[in-house]
Image (cartoon, rainbow, N blue to C red; front, side, top):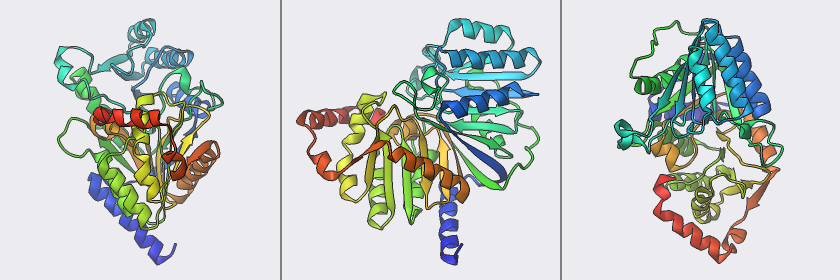
Length: 388
């Protein structure tokens, strides 16, 4: 690495630390997992080999075969004396199978619901936990965008099987994932989670930063600050995959400024198969100024795209639960990990380019020729844009 490249790398890392007030913890290994066929077997294998503890937080836990498979694995470990804690968002998991819940609790799994729809939480109902965290024995962690439902099974092979990116994390940074879990657990169960555990042994040579973003504060959230720092300090490439793209004026300005200074800015988001049509309309209303600044925008075609990653300058990346929209950056509790490692960044870039091969590029000329009803629908979303 040249002196100039090393200086750029250090500047980007310093900016992300300053923005989030979170250091990079050394000694980790990251394994990128693409789609349910890779994600679910890895998670289930870790659960089935748990010896002491399992902490599992998810937004979606929908009635399905894969949900039952996870329940069976959790029940087996709880029955064998492993401490198992399951935290489910009360809105995202509202359709969880009641028999599955009964089986979990009967086996000794400690189940908690985050902010149920009832009086004590009325003022916080708009603020959900969107975090996806699994920690096994304190030293194996998983995070990303996956939900526990049939839609995430498979290999994104058709419209019924979604495109997703998740990751396995081994090493000391698992302690930071546990802190994100503990924050939500403490509120949901009204009891603290013991965090005075031995720090996991080093498992690799990657330094990992964990950004725990909590909603409901009258200031920019840490995830918002993290993204802004990367957008401001990327010098060559800024490749973004986000399921839901509704950028704030500030983010639009940061992305346009990056493109104007010569950064290769590409945004990959959902196409017509999006599971949130209004969110897609709101995002498309932002395309014009971004395209005019030289930003390339692509819409994924085969199925619902649920991946959330950002890759910068071929070495830095972030994977987690946060989308590039107001719901993630303002209203929800989120968690992302970030790292600087050319090998892992290269894997994410290769997946990004493969996804572009199944996407439609949106040109400025094409966008300007869209139908009048689309323009009207896009404008109509401004009334609720702040909630998307």
